Amino acid sequence: MKKKQKKARAQPPTPAFPWVEIYQDNDWFHVHLVAAYLRTHGIPVVIADQRDRAYGGFTGFLRLFVPIDESEHARALLYQYHHATTSTQHQSE
View 1 (cartoon, rainbow, N blue to C red):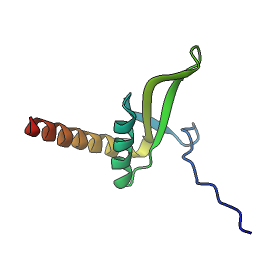
View 2 (view 1 turned 90 degrees about the vertical axis):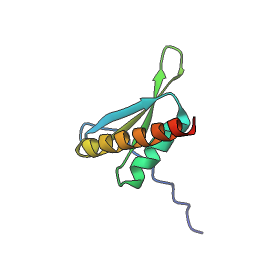
View 3 (view 1 turned 180 degrees about the vertical axis):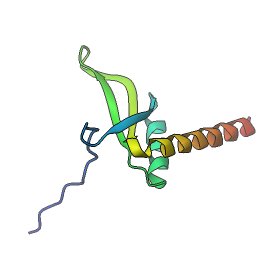
């Protein structure tokens, strides 16, 4: 019998492989949509949640990290994404 291979999980940012936070939001769906948009443009993304140890749970913010050498490209894509989605919303009103 073959062993099931575990799906590779994204590793959290570490000092040895510097990542930078470029986005945070409390909307789970929107954060994952932005992450997918960046991934389609070849940028690796790590999604981290912010937990509050005092309350033992989720405080409501998800954060996106990208490698530091990809951060300028990722920010430019976020700028394009933001303007594309906001102009679409204004046209539909």
